Length: 305
Length: 294
Image (cartoon, rainbow over the protein chains, first blue to last red):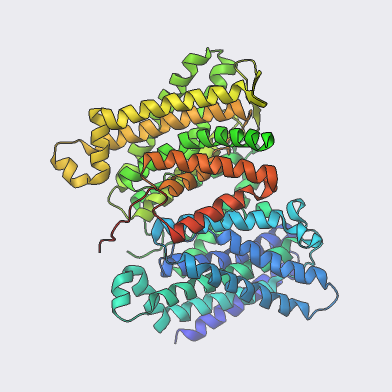
C-alpha cells in the first residue's frame, strides 16, 4: 500500500526538478544550490547512521568527505577522455573512503563518547594536512593551492539517483536485523554485547558505511564545483555536518533531510535576502540555536526520545 | 648544536603558553568531565582584551594582566552558568556539543565588525625587544618575559590548589562530587571558581601569545586550544602537573617539526600523537588506570 505512493512521489519530484532544470526556470546558481542540497543530505545521512543510529560520535566527517572528493577527482582528472572513469571513480570514492574509515575505525572505535570525538577530530585535522601537502605525492593534487580542472560530471540524474539509493539503503538497513543491532548498541553497549551482538563489528560497519556516504557526497561535490581546496574540508565543516544531524534529530532520516534543506537555504538564501551588514549574523544564530536545542530539546526537531 | 638549543628554547616558550591553556582544560575536565571547546576562544578574547588595553586605552602593562584575567574569568563563569549548568545531568556528548556551540558563537560574534572585526590585527609590543647573549645562545627579552610570567602563575596555582581551603574543595569535588556535597562543600560555587580560574590563566596565555607571535584574529583560539587539549591528554587529563609537562612536550615537538621537517606537517604530528595516546595510553603520562563502572 505504502510502496506505490512513495515510488510515484520520487518520480514526480524528479520530473518537476527535471522540468525546472531543462527549461531554465531556475537560474544556474539555484540549480547548483539544489544539487548541493542533495550532496549535503547524502553526507549528513552518513553521519546520522554513525551517530544518530549507532551512537558513535564522529567529528571527522569532513575528512571522509574530502577523501571521497580527492579520490574521485584525481581519477577523473587524470583520465579526462574516457567515460568509463565515471563509474570507476565513483566506485573508488565509495569503497576507498569506506576502506579507510574501516581501517581507522578498528583502533579508534574502541574509544567511547568524548574520547572518540577527539580522536576523530584529530583524524580530520591530519587529513586536511595531508591534502595541504598532497602535491608532494602527485602534483595534480594541487596541495594548498587547490585542485583545478576537475571535469563537471555531477548533474541532476546522478545526484538524485545516489540520494534515493542512500535513503533507501538506510531505511532498509535500519529496519533489518543490522539496524536492530545498531539500535541496541546505541542504547547500551555492554548489554548489547551480553546479548550476543558483536558490537565492535557493527560499530565498525556503521562507521565505514556512513563514511562511504560521505565519500560519495565528496565525489559529487568535487564534480559539481570542479575545484577543491583543503580548506573546504577543515574541522569547522565537520561541525556543520554535526549541526544538521542534531537539528534534524538523531536517528531520523526525514529530520536530517529537512534540516539539510533548511540549513542550505538559510545560509544561501539569507545571503541574498539580508543586507550585507547583517549577513555575518547568520553564523551567530546557528550556534545559539544549537545551545538552546541542547538544553531544551536535545533529541532535535524530529527526533524521538 | 646551538641551533638545536635555540629551537628548544623557542619550543619551551610556545609550550609554556600552551601550558596556561591546558591547565584550564584539565581542571575543568577533572571537575565536570567536560572537554570545554570554548576554552580556546576565551584565550582569544584574553588576547583581544590585552590588545585593546595596550593599544587603544594605553593601560600600563602590569595592570593589563589582572584586567584581562578578571574579564575572562567573569566570561568563563557566565558561560558555565548559562550553557553548561542546565546540562549537568545530561549525557556527556550533549555537554560537548553545547561547548562547541559556545565556541562557534564566541568566534563568529567576535568577528562582527563592531566587536573585534574579522581581520588580522598586529599586536603591540609593550616593551623593547632586546637579545641577550648567554654562552652562544641568543635569548629574546620576550622569551624571558613569557617564562617569568608563566612560572609565577604556576607557582600561584600550586599554592591555590594545594595550600588553600578552596583548592582542597576543588580536589574533593573532582574526586567525588556527591560525597563532597555531603561534606558541606558548595559544588556549584567550586565549579564556577574552577571555570573562572582556568579562564583567567587562558587570558594571560592569550596576551603572552599575542606579544610573542604578534598577530591576532577571532579564529586564533581554535588551533592553540586544540593543541593545549592534546597536551592535557598527553599528560593525563585532570592532572595539573601532567598538563604542564604535556604542554612543554607539545611546544618543543611542534617547533622541532617546523625547524627540521616542515611547518606544514606540525599539526599532523600533534594530532597523530593524540590518537596514539588515546589508543595505547588514554590515561596519559601521569594518569592512573580507572575502572569503568557499569
